Length: 209
Image 1 (cartoon, rainbow, N blue to C red):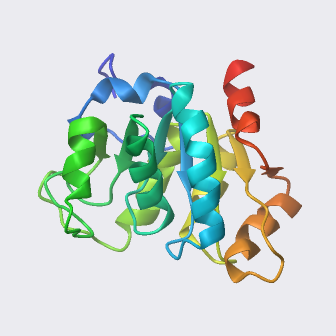
Image 2 (image 1 turned 90 degrees about the vertical axis):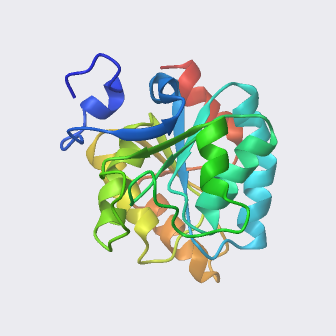
């Protein structure tokens, strides 16, 4: 935390990590970042939202932040890089540990084109409690957190609640009331999150900052 390169927004949260380990371009942590998270069971609806919106975010040089989990997180990282954007993956293992394992070595690709970030020692294996802990870093790096899809009980809602506690902007994509994977996002909106229907709403949070 004493290093001048330590991200300013992350320094402001209630429990900032004492140190950070990384692979890739660490300067990205001090660029304007938007956190985008959601369900591991990403639906065609969620896929379409990301495919439509990510090019707009990348075009304005926003850095996307997510957690490298399967589903939404993975789609955020892949979609950002597919449009020549930059992305940060905050992981629940050491930076030398690839989890979950993927045939195309996505984690390695992000380390070369973006940034892999962790508070755990490089050789640390995955542990159940690491993942809710890393969510505070995902929310802490970003001025705004976007929830694409989420069940009523979801790790993505943990990230949203952390962001709210840290007085960050929380936006949720509304979905069909019949879809279990929109139950969490719709509940967030009822509780006061901004209903997100256009990427322009995200961009406005940064233009007006």
